[in-house]
Image (tube, rainbow, N blue to C red):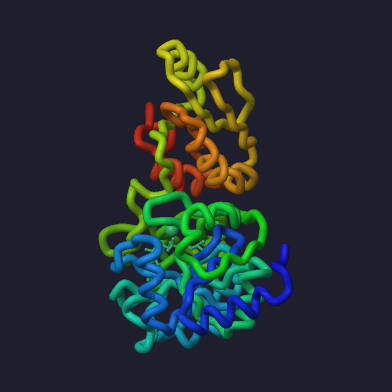
Length: 329
Ligand code: TXA
Ligand code: MG
């Protein structure tokens, strides 16, 4: 879906004027600003209420355009970009000297991504690369996957929202650091660990020596309603118990409701992780508004296709019953 004619030109003019423009990517909507303009970058942090130590991803159209932002390009980083750009992969690389410290959170590295969404690509082509953009939500909230979500989160803080329809992936990009000859997975996403491994061989888990990726807190990606993850085998019993106790429930599951009640709202997101991931954030937003005492999410499978979903659910959860979601990266 392309925005109305003239909107890209308007967006480019606003970016050049130091304003914020929200735009669709295939993962989630981004809150964009000119990555070379410190005053514009400051507006991102103010609009989101985000701590200034949290670095931003710089969006570019290609590996060639990434050159301006990085100090050197390792062979592994080149191979990953060749394989997955444009697409849902962010590379954390040694930064070039001129990259604004406000963009990198004062770190010696920069996160770069070439998004695949046609509107994002049109915007980058017209602007000329270098759009810093976090997800277009208030700090600690669920990322927006529809233009209406961006208005809900930041409508009064953004000069323009480019509407590119619903995001195809629906979960934030896979983040990989390529530093010191090591490839480290910092955030799971649609590009899986085995896809990375096929290109570069060994992929390490983040540990104390990996670059800090603030925003990896538990409190992230959270609805306002308490969210509890319940193991699939115990789901029905837990729902019956809570309904008997007078609760109003909202449930996200992979299959249909086994019981009916006027105090139960059920969202069936399907058994395929791509479909489920695409629908998850919109479902969480909607269920946050139904007046439930809690949102119950059925635990998802412990395997690679579900890894990014399991990661986001764990961060959204206030409680996990019986280890229903465990690390599956
Ligand atoms: O899919 C996405 O990645 C979306 C779209 C808009 O591109 N963007 C996004 O941005 O999710 P944000 O800011 O919400 O999350 C980016 C994460 C943050 O946790 C940040 O700490 C981490 O990336 N990050 C960015 N630059 C980094 C760096 N130089 N080193 C380590 N982590 C970095
Ligand atoms: Mg975010």
